[in-house]
Image (cartoon, rainbow, N blue to C red):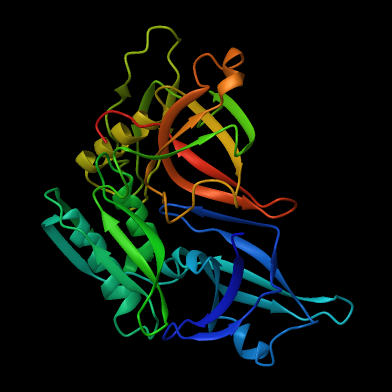
Length: 355
């Protein structure tokens, strides 16, 4: 039987502070290039003797392990002790949110590898001199970009990374957790042109599925066949991309105009954003979603990880889903539900040309 357990570690050096076998979470989420916040409970009964250190806000972080493999980690932002409650309540947020609290200063990059721009953003303003256990692992890239960052723009490392990653062909990044040989745990910002596999790593079938849905959505912001990107960065002028169209002749024109960042002045950069957004919205948001038994399904971070291509086969459900009962897609994250039998739901993104 697979074992799920929690530990607390230091945000400064990654050393283990305490084991927290009775920690309770109703649900968790991880998504590439974004953060998630949750609330967890530590019952007063059977709490460790050093529970104050293990739950110290902005000092300790919590890590969920499955058979010793790190699945998820988040640092403590808020600790609530209520005399009327049977548990200590902890509000936690994943390490990506730490990047949102790190301001970016002045820097100019001219024809620099996009993964190295991302690495410098994290290293220069979120790691060096910040007294934390955060690390960076950046792959090389042949994609060269220009970027200018200024202190007075008040941009965070997170917002700059997200802007850079949202252009067409932009770099990808995510935070994973590694266990060092000395027993310390470290959040690592992994940066690459593409994270994960391009071939199917594993598959889920009805033997492990607990639910299966297909949702085709053209709500506002979920589908568009004509897209432009605009900014407000240049005084009275309004920098804008051209309109990018998908060539969809089966539907009326469905336009979508959005602002990827208020600090962009280059129309080439805005065109790259518009092209990337059209690739996401051009066919609407067609979502295949399935949940699986966490303890019986292919192992997260062992047989597959966020960024990998995974497959599914709903078998007997093919009559309801002739266009989606089986297939493959990229898992860009996951959610977990612990309200009953532990369940995991991969967050899927269809593979599109040009990625």
